[in-house]
Image 1 (cartoon, rainbow, N blue to C red):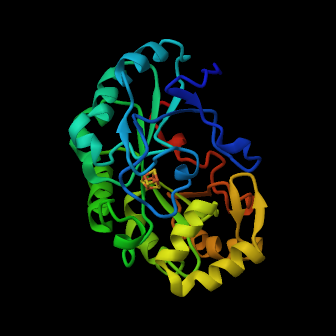
Image 2: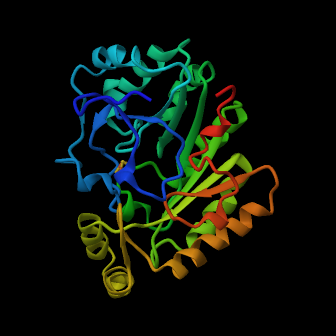
Length: 292
Ligand code: SF4
């Protein structure tokens, strides 16, 4: 696998060299720096300056066109890990759409991760690409508070259904699960999206100082419990502070059992280090890409 330098737009995906990351080898690409969805729990805001003032990447297409030439055939690109490729800016700049056009016909596999129904605009291109799409579902009850500028649950669900019916391999990400905030809802969300996916990925919230402060301010009634669970009892690992293992196990088990009832849907966790819940070793769902 080629290593790009720190100035490259396409980079090797390697989240904090996490020993519990079970992703297959892949590259990461973000058409935008920062994200306009404003999710309080977002980990990317801890390492990207002015994260919530998103901007398009300079000379994005020109640079990416050159970098694509270095990729070995069959490479997997993940779009995107540190921003949403269909965030509001995409309506104006269309960098994601231009990128999809750029890779038409190239021997590449693409994994798209988004919270936006704007992806349906590009259905014409998605049908021609080797692609799988993951849509994230976090909450219905607290969406305005937790992800203020991201599309609501109903719009994401409609996008998921439309992609599924169009034959695009679909994945639901139920993450992050945050104790006291969406832990009860997560099973309900899963039940609603399950008929329209082939794979489910879930994870619990891993605290970083910035996101933790935002959450405890926005949910003062949960602040005490969150502090006990993360500050007092939490486990410091690469990528943030984890909930105590037994609590994580319990939160994930409920979703795992629900998915296990259905033979055709696989299940994985994201950086939990709990192998008993992996129904597919390629956690990100990229195994669904046809011919990938
Ligand atoms: S959509 Fe993703 S990248 Fe954007 S703010 Fe939310 S969690 Fe962060």
